[in-house]
Image (tube, rainbow, N blue to C red; front, side):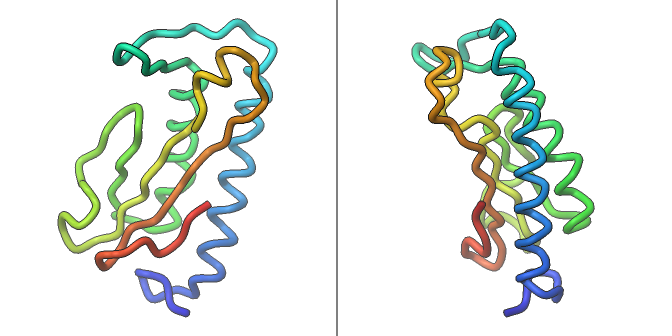
Amino acid sequence: MEGPDGRDAAALLESCVRVVRESGAIVRRHWDAPSHVRHKGAVDLVTETDLAVEAFLKERLAPLLPGAAFLAEESGGAAMPGAGDGPCWIIDPVDGTTNFVHRIPQVSTSVALWAAGEVRLGV
């Protein structure tokens, strides 16, 4: 299978998995530290961990598909899926922020790649 830039999709997936796994070190490092929480809505929370993981993912995913847009939960993005012709990384840096704040160990990092009108990979 071919990725959105003509590269081997399996290699792109492998690279993305490696980056997402590396981002887990940030979550683990922040686990025992106090969470600095702010509300972005009545029940939506955001922590320094969310912001740190998101920044890491954007920095490390960008070179995998140069020119790809980002739609990220905490910082938004310049592109919505389906807008424009290029691929778009979709990121939820700490999926389960409320669990993270309460130290319930059921959190994850979610990353998808949207291209050509469909999800091309998900991690």
